[in-house]
Length: 304
Length: 304
Image (cartoon, rainbow over all chains, first blue to last red; front, side):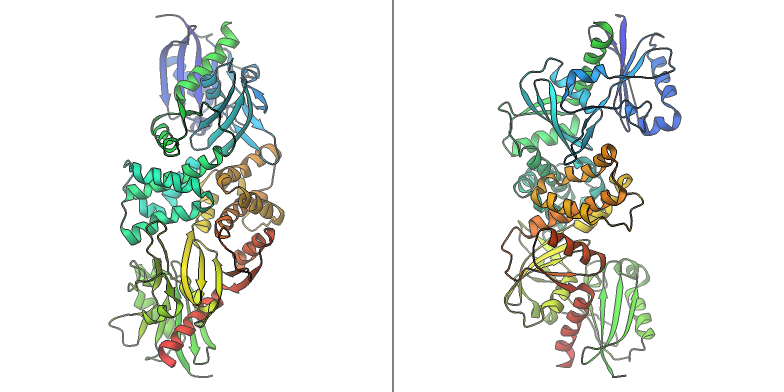
């Protein structure tokens, strides 16, 4: 086994992932848990991190690089924001040092768009962008990062120029759990109905103003024509994603298409959605992107 | 005191209202409670109604006309639907008789739009339409009925031609209570910020696809510029209403403008929203409309 060079940590709102990495970027050990920011704020960030470092037998002076909500005001140590237009290289330069720790621990900042007409923030996604595009990114990219709070980001010559957050994933969650549609989708948690999904994406993309009507239609259709819970669930999901795509694709789309950074079921759904609209997509795995982003930053900070 | 001619009941999902009415349409007595369909399905519809009838000393053979969710499949007696295109006069002709009751009790049907592309249902609003427009309605009307599930209805020569339901009110409720925006709006329950509301209406009306982004902006703005909870709440409310208006106003708007049927705070918010978009509105009180609609139907059924 090669020597570990640093530890990379993706510390989100509700998840914790840690990798022990050598100087070539190879993963030597890995940890995952649900001790995200919310849980760690209760039990203590140093204790959570220390337990995982001990589990992978990280040497005592090995440096640790963290990204994500651990750097929020309500997190461990506030890591602030880099303002747009933000060179991806500026992120690692503004990493915040955690005080009072024997080993060097740094938390990467987020990115803020201080535009009173379109204020926006990201924290964690900047590291995925760095991983997917690299420090020496050239050309223009339109990046779609689906999630609880999806981000659409315009990057030009390695500089994050503008971005927009859409509450798509969170809307899906609260509407499917808490609204009248919870009755329509009951029992369909894992089901898939690709035809209903694509039809909903197209309908919402074509008439985004009708979103709240298309959503209610999932229930009316069941009442009048007896649709399945799976169809209702995919209509809900496709409607919300279709509206997001109508906004995200409303500006210039680069010839190469969209850089999609996503994992698992979300990656599958968004690929289907772009396919329904005949928009070209380059898929990037989100977890790989964040690990690469942390590696690029750690290498630049500690091993160059 | 004149003789009562009939009893009118608006029996919604979560509210119950009863009026004792004479043959001229005058209200002799009134009852209100939160024993809506959901509560009455537990305690029993006949018992709830009987208690209120006793409280207003309704004579034993006085007929009762009911509208609303009491006529749903999950209500008291299913009153079915009249299909679009639906003459307002057809509603009272298809009132369902409640069996096994000494007095005559009828429940008005809802209206169904059995269009596989735009399936929709209403139950209760048809009675408000009848009350606001009358049995002998002429000309064309575009009616906006805000609520948990807002309805936009096209009526031509007394016939309900098409309608669309928007989950606007319910979205406001679940987003303000259950999403990350609950933090942004905390403590602003009764506050009003007309400037933020109107700005949000205009922004969402102009770019409805950005709804989920404009919503998140309420939080980002607070993080970056320190806005008040009242401003965030009105941004949430204005965004959702602005998107609804973008859809509702997307077809031909009659020269007379919009017939708005609403009460209380919702009436005020929608009037402000239409004002922000310079669209003319004729206000109708929703409670008065439903009582008038029940009176028109009861008079046609029993006193002609």
